[in-house]
Length: 290
Length: 325
Image (cartoon, rainbow over all chains, first blue to last red; front, top):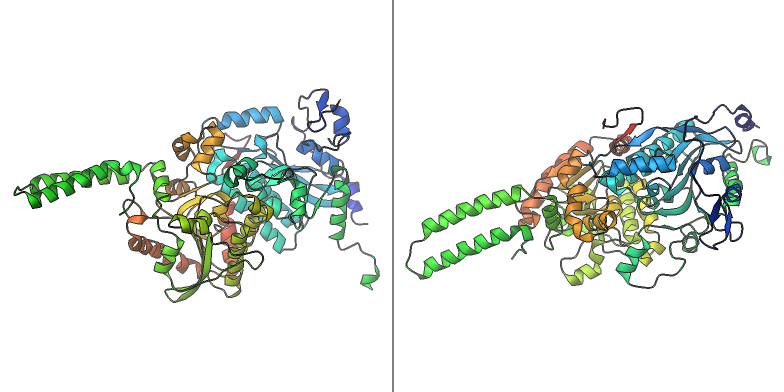
């Protein structure tokens, strides 16, 4: 099969830089915020950070996400060293960025690149809430836009994992405009037949949910993820009515027709493979060709 | 009578004094004309000082003035044969957005805009100009129709933001906004967007993906309201004034950041002081915009729009000098 070419070749190696190994200082034990059970962090990571006792999906760092899905050694990162400036001269912004760079071992709130998933080539973007709550400023917008343009150029699907509190306030209206920029890039890609898959993870809100996160040909979400436009507190203050407990969860959105499916993290790779496979036209042999 | 704003208080004082003196001159047999002349000169100077040195917060006040002209005020002055079209064909008609077909100096166009109310009753009906998803879906329906019949689209932006409510979330506020950004960027007809009041975040941008974007001099366009920014950044909504300055939300700021094309000058003291004159100012810029854009074919328009948004944003690479913009 032609896709085997991509598995065998492994022509891309991860760019070796100090942040590739996620040596985020972590405790040996992790407490599940939902069931309060204490477990070995190592075991939790091995279980893709899904709680062994209650199934709660813990936040997954972008590098782990990429490792968990893409074929070993296939990932090649784009624009790894693109970083923010301070366009509004916002007091304290540069210090906050510096601090998050140190804490998260990331340069910005999204990691983009290309690779193969079970042999299927694609361009992937994974947002990371460990950096400025995954908020979107100029860099996040630009990196995602460039990744989409790359997918367009390579004629491969675009897969995005979102995790973001919304637009980054410290870059003001420039952050807002990234919503239009990324959406416009998706439109051009889509018009040429490009496949867009969006997987919303906890949390996906504000300007990110109101742009590329909602624009997949397939919109998926992880169980329990908070997804919405306005914050719960803002809504409570404006409408002054009791909001249901599951308000703005992935399950709530599914019920209201806003998602294609909610997918358990353990089933994600298989589901994505199915989608990619179906969009390859089903293979090269079959009755439909005769 | 025009409601006065805080920063206009010194002017009110002075104007009242002049009126008093004039009244007094009529009744009593004293010649105060020299005195009045002096005061009038002072008034003119003070007006000049105040109106040519508006702070961002002053402009926020003008943009939110209850009598500030709305989309419909401009539609009636700039267009003829306006036929309002209602409904998104899915759920309902959101009166926080108005739209329809009209003629602009003979040219068939589609015109859409956020619509605030002028009084409490109308504001309740129009939800204070804060749309629900069906509003954005109505707007998109009208834009697609405009594309089908190859009419230019003119959008007036004037909203505090998309409505944050339970029903809005249930019906997909995020998706509705995202869909508009996505579809607008691909339309093969000219789109001119004009911010006439407040341009509040995603709810404003959902009508804002244009080939040309203009702003009235005293309008604002921002990722979040000054109050919201102050509450989140400094945990104190009272610092809104400081936030208005820090967040760079005025027409001049946006021009400098490369987001908008033209600043449309306003009548001194704000658009509400002379709506006809203000409409005439908009007319000049709108006509110029359309004249340029009507020369371009569909593909070029899409490309131009994409390039326009593609260049917005500032970043660098870690091996470069951090100070390079």
